[in-house]
Length: 59
Image (cartoon, rainbow, N blue to C red; front, side, top):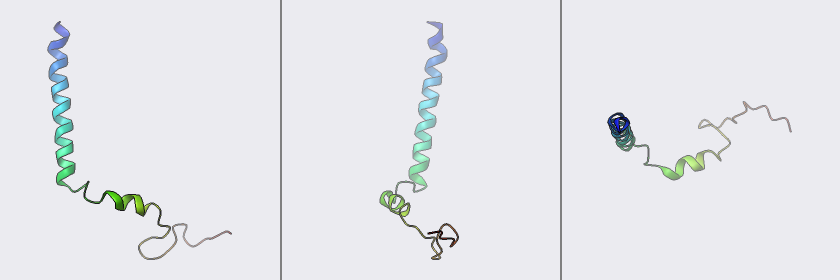
């Protein structure tokens, strides 16, 4: 029974910390472009048009 005196505040603290982290991620725009990250992993070039391997195509 005395363990509950420690476990309940720890559980509440972890819950509040995770809620704060979730609210921070919402506020910073982490969930605004959900499909863009999945599509960017399929692109084989950088934004400037260079291949990711530095142009060394050993085909």
